[in-house]
Length: 84
Image (cartoon, rainbow, N blue to C red):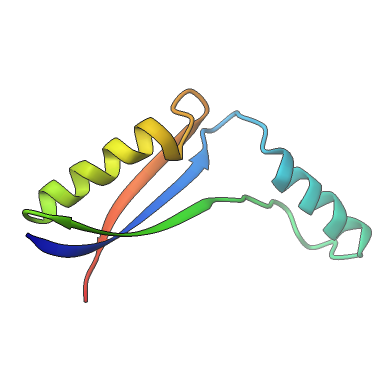
């Protein structure tokens, strides 16, 4: 087995309110950063794991994202293998 570095990015689906992003946007406006038009907050997970090959590593990452790292009803996720 080989060690892989995964990057799993989780973000809200279009149309789902992101309260953290809204709070940051409001705070930036109050601090007079008036040119800010939108704020998005993503969750980023960096995972090191052992797998047979890159496809297996991605499959494991997707499984983790579906079962624990994201709320599949409200969030989308992307899994990427980082190249050394």
